[in-house]
Image (cartoon, rainbow, N blue to C red; front, top):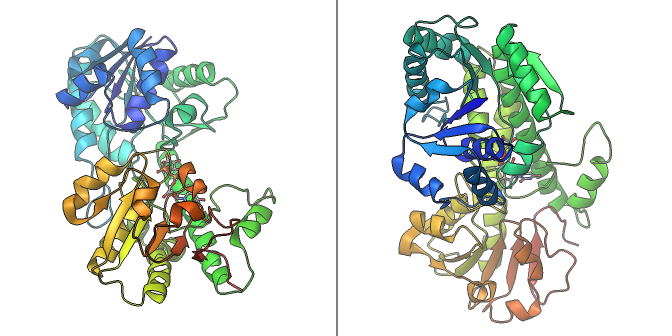
Amino acid sequence: MNIAVVGLGFVGLSISSVLASKNYNVVGIDIDNQKCSDIRNGALSLFEPDLENTLRIGLKKKLTISNNFSLIKNCDMIFVTVGTPQTPLGAIELSMIKKATTTIGQIIRKSKKNPIIFIKSTVVPGTAQNVILPILEKKSGKKANRGFGIISNPEFLQESNAIRDTKYPHAIVLGGKQSKYMKKAKMFFSKMHPNVPIVITNFETAEMIKYANNSFLATKISFINQLSNICQKTPGVNVDDIARTIGLDPRIGKLFLNAGPGYGGSCLPKDMKALINFANISGINPTLLNAVEDINSKQLEQIITIAKQQLIDLKSKRITILGTAFKPNTDDIRDSKSIELIKKLLKNKANITIHDPKAIENTKKIFGEKILYATSIADALNKSQCVIIMTHWKQYDTLNNNLIKHMSEKNIIDCRRVLVKKELDAKYYAIGIGKN
Ligand code: UDX
């Protein structure tokens, strides 16, 4: 079985590495030649636990990385994992997927293989049927479900857990027409993931499942964030005890109830906006989704309000931000709430020092010399007048009286409640904890 993966971002790289480590012949393709050569050398431009190791195993086995699309012609399966970025109006931008599928179509025209093309990129309902399938048919001169298969196969992996999620997904979704290709795809996935539910449906439903998944997760987060704001105004109330308890109800579930500064990253905010845009175009006013986004966009105000209460005026005050990655165990700062907060604090003329175990280099690309970068927590806190914990890196659990002793004013704003149980010689404010 020869497999191609087109687009070597997070998803593509994780899938190609895992498939190759399981002894499939895999060719990972990306238009960026420099990126391909870095990947071949095992030098990844991103930090993702286990990815480097799995890639190394894959490269030793049967993984080829190339910018040469013609390698697709010998493949039985082609996974399309290119990005679908956001337009200014919130819709998705299809130029990369159109370009990739145009090239795939041209190559399979000359190939004797009848491959299955899996669309893993996140696209709104109707895209496979109305955009991708016509491109593939036109460019290949072959008919879908005869000369090639096309299946919508959304991806649910989380950054920082990419390899684990690729090896052990919670579900496999296969959207498309019932055909010999669908049967073959089902056999392939049931062999790869013997005990994982496989949902077979049509294109549009498969495409919508991805948006339903991410918008539900975003809804859970905005729900707990709004509740946490109410808790904060109610003396003695602790949002974590509430989340833990309601999470025991199997109808609710315990995950994604961690209150904080709002959801960020490259997926949840983008997918929410795309679904809202899609709903509006469909003539549905998505009041709930709009509220979820609205709560998310206002959550940072909570933090700024506390900072202003403590420091009176933010101008020229030294504020330390602990964590700029959009979540722990990644160096990704795309749509990170921390970055947004720093921008707002800079507008208020505050002086900023940041610390992050992995994301300093990426943060520098945004702020350059406008802020200070500390490589240790102690340095980050030195002469600071307020520290704001934004990302729950494990290191921040170690914060204690000794580490904060060189702060010039001891104000702590803990957005992740990592220090809630500690006795600290400081003014301590935690998001979601009502002060007595
Ligand atoms: C998300 C989806 O979880 C994944 O299924 C999809 O394939 C891609 O998008 P990811 O972007 O890696 O994954 O991040 P995720 O772990 O979902 O976190 C998103 C944001 O929500 C982060 O900013 C995180 O800090 C925040 N979050 C998450 C909370 O604030 N509270 C929570 O309880 C969970």
